[in-house]
Image 1 (tube, helix red, strand yellow):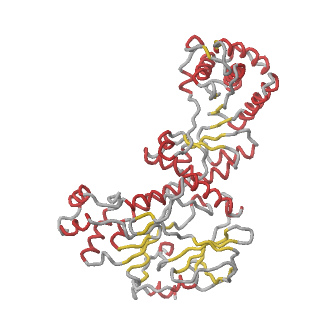
Image 2 (cartoon, one colour):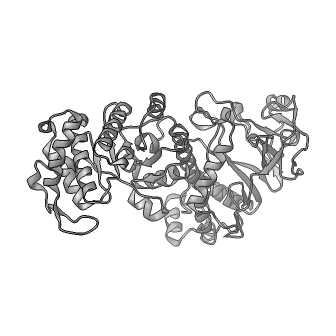
Amino acid sequence: MAPLADLYHLTMAYGHWRAGRHRLPAAAELFFRRGPFRGAFALGAGLAEGLRCLRAFRFSAADVAYLRSVLPGTMEDAFFDYLATLDASEVPFLQVKGPLLVVQLLETMLLCLVNYASLVATNAARFRLLAGPDVKLMEMGLRRAQGPDGALSASKYSYIGGFDFTSNILAGKLYGIPVRGTIAHSFIVSFTSLEEVKPRELLPLAGGEPVDLPALAESWLGQVCEVLQTSPEKANRGELAAFVSYAISFPRDFQGLLDTYCVRRSGLPNFCAVALALHQLGYRAIGVRLDSGDLAHQAKETRRVLRACGAHFQVPWFETIPIAVSNDISEQSLEEFSREGSEIDVVGVGTNLVTCPLQPSLGCVYKLVEVNGSPCLKVTEDEEKMTIPGTKMIYRLYDPAGHPFMDLMALEEEPSPSAGQELEIRVLGQLGETSKVVPTTVEPLHRTYFRDGQVCEPLPSLPEVRNHAQVSLSLLSPAHRRLHEPQPYPSRSTRAVRTQPSAYLSSDCPEFLGEKE
């Protein structure tokens, strides 16, 4: 992964090496300037992948040979020999400290690993908040993702953000994410009649003689249609055959896709007939899925039919069969389901989860803040892009109700704030005014995970990360957690942060000096 960098990082690395500056101690910080999706929160993700890359950070002989072929021919051979010896043994993460040359080489790799991971985890968290705690969420964006790498990342980080399952088998294998799936329209339309069902027989769960399931299901179809007051002739026999064939293959996991033809006249009667036939043999159907039309309305109609059949045929579990929906589900879809009081138990989300169409990039940046003990900063006419000099610590401040109400930035050498202490703070970018806060609890957010070339603290498992993310979201106040027009979550600094001088600030910048004094 060492060559996962932009070309200018290598040319700058040569400049540092040529000037003898390559081993100067340096620090950089990775951050974003605005919360994604116009929200007040973001889930940080990608730490584990970043640590793996740092641990394996090496330029192989093949890497060095390739770099020789693309970099200017005037570069000295000794520089390439130096690259071959390079590693990240002196670099912690995500506030990155180490030799200047290495700190700068890591920029693109870390941004690549953190940007999308954090974006899709935050997007998934928004879907979870809209769905509520009881609805199951399934990520099913493999076919719409930006390539296989993007698909695997989407599966992993949407799970952290609060999704329960993925349809991606490889993601399940690699990351241990629970894998789920239903049935596709292509399976159903491939059947035209019950004569195509082979094998036809199914053994009862309790044992005994095998039963001709197509015949049994067809006998139940007439009874179901009588209850639903619809004609059995309107139920598509190819769909019935598909359901029967699937039920014979998966009697303990039978589920039906209801909208291939007509939900009311065909999908529901056929599903109920097969499910009742399975019930007669001792099995239980596990669910239905709707994939088109007015999903909230159809879910209500489906629940009504399931309840009617359960009551009429005295099958109590029938009315609780889970109803899943899919079909270009978005945040707006979930809001509509909530307003209409839906009967939906499972929601499958693909395109609008993995591609993050509301905001395709998080916009994380990676900026040098200190070199050889002297703070440094970027000065620009765009005030938002000015960096804050000096190596810093971040503390999360909590109110008496247990909600975080502010993140406080302090210089690394400042004493740590403590609970109950009155703290003088200032708004970032506004140096004149200060205010005071008294936190009930103070949580330091920086922890060292990588030192001397090794991961120095056990990394949590993916389920543990997921649980931590969900607990953290639950601690946010409702004003910060809401998705539309949330109250901005404040980041503030101590007085020392904004008065920190920079040895790299040129004296010929009067506008900046005058503004900041």
